[in-house]
Image (cartoon, rainbow over all chains, first blue to last red; front, side, top):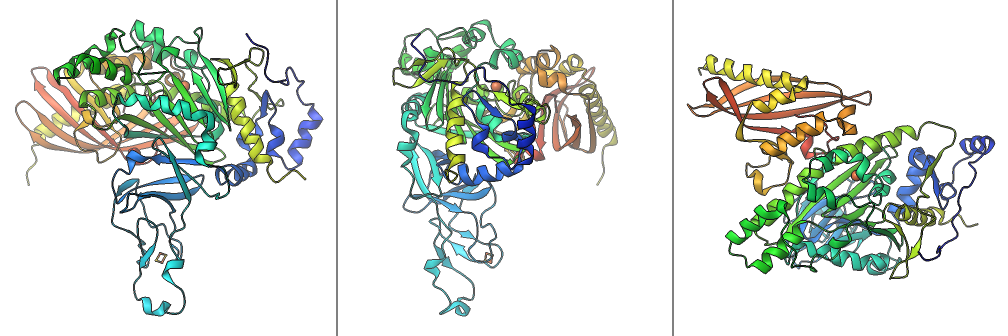
Length: 445
Length: 161
Ligand code: FES
Ligand SMILES: [Fe+2]
C-alpha cells in the first residue's frame, strides 16, 4: 500500500468537559465541529446550524432537481426542492429546461402543486396570473389596473441557473460559481459508467419510492458511502438471496475501495467486476437472471444483446455520492431533502431503459422493490439505524461522531485521488471537508 | 338497493381474520390464506392503475416474495423488524363489489396504527380484496393496499399491511 496521502489527525483526545460546556453556551460554529477524523454531534441536532446549512450549503452550490427523462416533452414539469424552497423543473415549447421558483410574483402563492405532469402554463389559483413554462408572466385578469404600474416582462417566475450532465439536472441560485461540469469534476467519469445500465438504451426514470426518517440529512449523506454497515444491518436481505448473489454482496473482503473525488463527491466501489457494465459481456447468465434472459430471447433479442441487457439489469457495483443531495447508487438515484434539523425526506428513484424491452424494465423494478424503498428488505433496517443515530446524538458527554475508519490505510488512486479500503470512511471525510469549507465561508475574519 | 348480507358477512369475517393474523404476527398462518399465484400489492401511488407489473410498487409480492418477506420479519436478523411491536388495524366500510362463483371482489377502509420509538404512526388505506371461494372458505388471490401516504412520504415499514 502506498504511503498516506494526508496527515490525518488521529487518536486525538476527546475534548475536555470544560470545552464541551463552553460549546453549549457559546453559539456554535459548524465549521469548527468538523475535524479530519471526527465531527461533532451538534451538526445533527442544532437548529441554528441547520438554518445556516440551508443558506450556506443548499443556496450556494449545485443541487440535483431531477432527471431529464422525468420531463421528456415540451410542457412537462416536475416539482422539486432546493433545501426548503419549492421549485419547478419544466420544459418549454422549444425543449429548453428551466428551474423556476414555485412562487407567484403577485402575492406569493405556489403556482404548481402535484409532483409531475404536463401543462400549457402555470396559472396561479389565487388571482389567476398565468406564467409560461419558461416562467414568463403571460397574462393576468383585469390588466388595466396595472397600466403604467409595472411591465409584465419584469415579473416572471424567478428562475435559477440550470445545467445538466448526462441527463442529471442541477440548479443553483449562484450565477458566479463554477460550471456544473467543473463542480462534478472527477465524478463525471463515474456518472458516464453509471449510465451504461440502460443496457444500450437511454437511462429513464421508471418511478420512485418516497419515505422520511426522523433524523438529520447528513446521516443519509454518510450512509451512501458506508460499506461497513452492509453485511451487519442488511443481514436479513442477504439471507433472502440465493447463494451466488449473496456471494456478490459479500464485498468487504474484496478489492473494492472508496475514492475521494473532490468537492465533497466520492465513489465507493463495492463490486469491481460490475464497474463497467459494457465489459465482460461473455460471462454466463447468473441463475437469478435466467428467466429474464428467456423472456428477452422470446422477444427475438439476439444472444449478444440478451447478455448485454442481463448484465445491465444488475446495476453497477458502485455508489457515487454527489454532494450535497444525490447519489447514483448501484441501480438507482437516492435524493435527499433536509426538512428540518431532525427530519429528512428521501426518494429512491428506480431506473430502466427508454424503449428497452418490457421484461428488462420489469426486472429492474422488481429488483428495486426487493431492497429499496420504505417496504424493501434493506431500507427499513437503514432507517432504524439512522433513527437511532439521531436519538443517540442527543445523549452523552463525548459528543464526537467518528469518521476516521481506514485513515491508516490510504493510497493514491489511478486518478491521483486519496483512496481507502471499501469499508473505510474516506467518502464521508470528503463530504465533510466540502461541508466545512462551505460552512466556513464568510467567517475568515 | 339490496345488499347480500350473507356474502358481506363471509367476506368481512375473512378480512377480520386476516387482519387479526397480521396484527398478532401469525405470519405462517397468513401465508396459508393465499392461492399459489396470489399477489400482495402496495402501489407507490394511491391512484395507481392496475398494471402493477409495469409500474414501480412499494411491494409486489408473489408467493416467493411473500415467503421471504415473512422470513425477514420472523428470523430475528432484521433490526427494524425486531424493533416493531404489535400493530393495531381497524377495518371498516366493507363493500362487496362483485360476487361471482369463482371470484369475489371487495373493498374496505383500513387504518393501521404502529408505535414506533414511542410515537404513534397511523396509516389510512383503501384495501381491495380478490377472493376465490373454495370448499374450506376463501383463498386470497389478490390484496391491494392503497396507502394515503403513498402520495407523500411513508415511514419505513417492517410489518405487513
Ligand atoms: S397570488 Fe398569484 S395571482 Fe395573486
Ligand atoms: Fe444500507
